[in-house]
Each structure stands twice: as structure tokens, then as C-alpha cells.
Image (cartoon, rainbow, N blue to C red; front, side, top):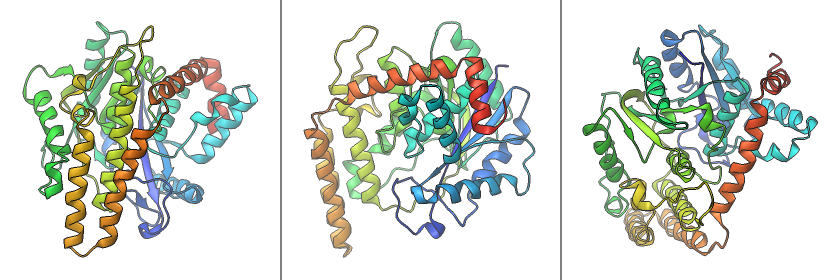
Length: 406
């Protein structure tokens, strides 16, 4: 069995969830709460085997919380002690790694070290896997339970099957809820008729889960159940410019480089997220900015040696349906209906914030920057850093600098 690093990001915010947030996460754990992280870690205990290690990457919703959050997670991990060691990576560790890069003439790569936003945090999990010399990264989330005793056995079988025909690839599994359901509840609010995100996701899942072989190509993946071999994560970074949806975007970015993703419909984790606290208009804003940005990335593609062209049609039904020219009309209709509902409920402020979302869409549409070229530039710097960090002597020295052990 190859060596795995199981990486689990965990997101924390102000006590009681009250305070300014510089980064919006779906359901961060309040600093005075215990959260769901230990539940996830304990679910892994029966599955731990030689060659498998675990790292927790800590993110705070505001920079002022960084030290307190890191200390709180350290306490959660230690009280009571877990039945296996867990490597912690927080802001203090990134500072040490940044100093290491500077000392070795690699200061130009320091901007790649960030714990602000989903994509940036996922990239830190990839860096951690590189420093640990892992053959593959198993990406989970802190609101999940791994209750399949054959979870790692299935991963090993899939990797062995895929590597025979694909030099580089990605692997994804599925989410199920506490009742074992895979399909997502579809909102019935009027605005959802013009923003059918969950309907299109379910359509994609039905195609992947109800038909064809267990292991097949996929246009989407879930960040809490992704398996990334070293040949992939040392080449392809997550895009930190996205507010959310970094997992599905990662599949698309891999396609730019001719790298396929496969989904194993038997590789399941149980997803038990807390109830989100952010209003509908804010969640819709993050979706809108995300899809508009990704659409710009597709539109800015130019022929380049070694790159494949990716179209919205290649990513149907999800996320492709949100990456066409229809996005603007969908957005205007959905936001108009949501604003109207807020007004009927007597919440004029929320109605205004809803309509302000459309200004963000216009800003992205007017943006003359090149999101595609920016991602390629990011990828070039990323691959250079990963290639250097992957050298055994460099990785060992970096581990000593960051964690005090080789």
C-alpha cells in the first residue's frame, strides 16, 4: 500500500460566531466551541495502518484569530489524546516555512503560502503532503465521518487500476448523508428555479452513480473526498482566487493540462455538516462570483503547447450549466426573485444586499484581466516550488524547520 497523508482542513471563527470575518467559510467552528474535528479524527482510528498519517490544517476567519485558533485546535487534538499522532499546520508553521524559503533563496514563492480562503488552505494541504513525501494525498473535511472499513483498500485498488493507463490522474469519491442518501435536497424557494445548482448537481451525480462502471471519468469532485497522487498535486495547485468551489475548479484546471479525474461511486464518506449561518444572499454571492470567475477563465483560454482546450460543454451538467452565456440571465432572474421575497418578508436590507450581488457580476464581466493566464502563472510557480520541496534532502530540512523533526 502506498504512503498516504490524510489532510483535514478545519475552519474557525470568533466565539459564538460573532465578529468580523475577513474570509467567509460555510460553517466555521466558533472559537469557544468544540466543533466536529475530533469526530472525524476518531472515525479514522480503526482504519489507521502503517504508511498512513494524518495532518490537520488550521484556518481562521480573521487574521486576528490565528494564534488563538491554532492553540484551540491543539487543545482539541490533545484533550483527551488521540490514539494516533496528528501533524498540525497553522499560521505559525507557515511563518517558519516562509523563513525557510527566504533563507534558501526561494522568497519569490512565499506568496503561495496562505491560509486565507478554501483554495489557499487546500494548497497548504498539498505542501504538507510534499514535505511529508506522501505518495498520495487523501483530502477530507472536518465535518465528515469515514465509516467504510475498506476505505483505504478501495483507494489502493483504484490507484493501482488507474496508474496502469494514466501517467497522471485524480480520483474522487462521493458524499452521503447520515441516512446514506447521495442526492442533495433541492431547495423549493422561487429563486431556486433560476439557480438550480442542486438540481444540476444531482443530475450529474445520477449519471455518475446510477449508470456505467464503478470507476469512470467525472466533471466534478468533492473536496472532502479527493485522492491526489503526488504526480498530480506537485503539478496542479488549487486556484486561491475562488471564494468557494475550489474542488470542482481543480478538476477543470487539471483538464487544461490533459489530466483526467475519475470518480469511484463506491468510495463514500458520511457528510454531517452543521447548519450554515450565512444568509441566502451571501451564499448566492459566493456562487455568482465563483461561476463568473471560472467562466472568465474558460473564455480567456488561448492555444498553448501542452495545454488542452476546455469548454463548458465538457463539464455538463454541473458545473458546465453555470459557465455559459446563460449565467447572466440566470443570475438576474434568481436575484430579482430573492430580493422580492426579502421585501415581502420585510427585510429591505437583505433585499438591497441581494441586488448588490449583481454589481459583482458586472465587475467580473468588465474585468480586463486574464484569469487563465494568471492561473498558468500560478501553476508555473507552484510546480517550481513543489519540484524543489519534493527533493528528499530539502523536504527533510523543511520538516525540521517547520515542525522540529525530520
